[in-house]
Every structure is written in C-alpha cells, then in structure tokens.
Image (cartoon, helix red, strand yellow):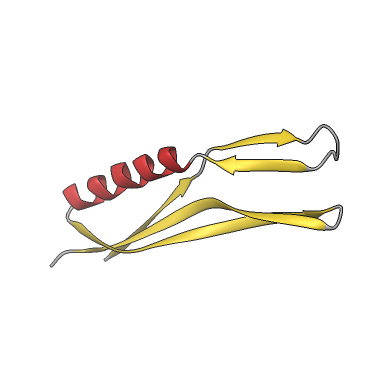
Length: 80
C-alpha cells in the first residue's frame, strides 16, 4: 500500500518598486520543518518514505522569469 502527502510551501511576495517585477522567496526552514513532521508521522503509521519530489511553478514577465518550489510530494510505502 502506498500513501502520498502534499506539503505546500509558504512564500513571501513583493513587487520591486522601480521595475514593478514580482519576486518571491520560499521559507526553506518552514518547508524543512513541515517535511520532517510529515515524514515522522508517516513512520509512526508504519510507512517507509521512498521519495520526496519538488513541484515547481514560475512566471515570465518583462523578459525575465523565476521558478520556485510550490510544494513537495512525499510518497511512502507501507512496511510489510
């Protein structure tokens, strides 16, 4: 049996006052803590984590763009 959990990132967004370009920064510490919490919870339920995959998104504006981590998917397998 498999189980997957999505962990969404928290980001800070702002607009540059001179160029009006939008920027964002992912709170990596918060994301790491949430991944740890979810992995420990799965382990207590008898699952073994076998993948953690980032889901990215981005934008192209004014000739420049950015990509950031929107979320991660944790996939685990029930121990036999």
